[in-house]
Structures are given as C-alpha cells and as structure tokens.
Image (tube, helix red, strand yellow):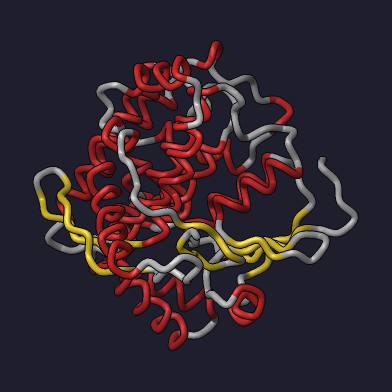
Length: 360
C-alpha cells in the first residue's frame, strides 16, 4: 500500500459521476483514504463551488476537478501507474477521458432522468441519500434542469439510447477478451469510463437492467475496476498498440461525440471573441451549442470547461515529434477523432485556483 500517516479524505457520493472516476484510482493505487458523504458546506468553504468530488490530502490541501485529482495522484504516487508512458496509448487515454467527461454526461443523464420510472427511482435514491424527501427532491429538481443542459431531451432520447446501446455492445466485445481498456492493466481510460458506466448506468436500476440483459462483460469490468487486485494485474498492450476492439470503441465514441464537443468549443470561442479579457474569470456556460447526434438535433449548454479539456488533448498531441504524431494519426484514422485533433483553438483557458480564467 502507498502509505501515509493520515488518510486522504474523499468527499463523494455513490451516485456521483465523477466520484466513480476518482474512487477506482484511489483503490488501484492502494492509497490510505477515507470516503465520506460529500459535505456540501465544507466543499463550498474549501472551493467556493458545490462540485463533487473533492479530495483533501493528508497535508490539508484541497484538490477539486477529477482530471486534476488524477494528475496529482499520478505525480505523487506514480506506482502503480495509471498513465502510459508510450505515445499512442497515452493519447488514447486522453481521448477516452475527453469523451467521458464532455459527452458521456448526455447518455448518463438520459438514463437517470429520461423516463418516468428512472426519475421516480432517482428521486427516491436522492431522498434516501440526503435523509430528507424535501432535500432529495430539491437536488433532483436541479438535476432535471441539468439533464436538459447536457442535451438529454425527450426529442433526442431515441438517438441517445441508440448511442448507449451501441456503446455497451462495443464495450462488451472488448471486455469479452480483455480485462481493461488497454489490455490487462487499468489506466486513466478505465477511470474515466467508470464515471458514466458505474456512476450512472450501473447505479440506476433501469439502466442496470440493460447491462444485466445485454452487457455482462461490462459488469465484469466494473467489478474488476472496483476491486482492482492491483498486484495481480498484467500489462498494457505490447509495443504501444491497440486492439481491433479498442479501435471499435474509439470509432463509436469519435463518430458520435466529436461533433457535439466541437460545437461546444466553437460556441465558447465565439463568446470569447467578443468578451475575453486576459486574466478574467470565464463564465462556466456561454449559451447553447447546436449539433446533432445520429441525425437528431442536439442542443447542449456550451461549457467553457470543454475548451480546457480539449487543451489536455491538443497540447501533448501538438508537442509530439512529427513521427509520433503521424503514428497517432494513422492509429485513429477512420474513428472520427481526426477533426478534433486538427482543431486550432483561437483562445486559451487556464486554471487559477478553482476558477477558469482567460489566458493572459
């Protein structure tokens, strides 16, 4: 175990999307941590934002934002590693994380709030979780609004459901053969995918039935991630490779998600063209981003954070040597990710504490 005298304190909820992403990393790295029911008042005091989860370090520092939490855990506790050192597999992790963080919320909110049954059960779970029907319904009301903000509307429901079922199919094909996304060892990609798949699909009863009926290999993968048995895991794919089944996952994700992701970035950049001031705090949402999913119109709130996440992909990609970049391009050719890797942002967003700011 990666021992510390004092535990990390992990403020999380079982039904929280991004809590699922971080929790499995803490377990995989065999860290001494204490998970507590997220205390919103303490989180607000520490960060000024009611975003879950946060991780309080043994030294008392507060880490917020699942992507930065995992970055910092990897830097502080590099063994066992979650981030491949090889070029292609590291880029694959970044692309899957971008899909999960910036598109995966759409099918996740669709399954939790998209039917009368799922909403009724989610409200009951929220009431039990908060210990109050009134508080649970108040939290649920906020989530229903958030559902529409991520495009999970009734009109888009059939297209989102089609995407979800195809996603479970390609994941099942892969996990029938491989324990994890990059082979026989967990990686950042698995942590990111646990956000939608465990945080929502497996936690909520209606979508959990779908997994049991159609995607048993995915359930096996969930179990492996939640109880990682780190010392008994194998290795990532040899020679910085990816399997045909992982290519299929990347293709499904890229084909359906790149358009909505770039539509959000375009809307954020258009807003910044008129309003950006170096060093000023960036609004979290800047209007609607219009795109489509499988021929169906999709409208989602344009989140400034999406541009920050895109930078996490493009910065290391642009820093590659020409030969390495060509290897990545060849590997993802035909997946739909090409347009995203070719995108040239006009603006840049940085972090200042817990806030996003326009780069100076």
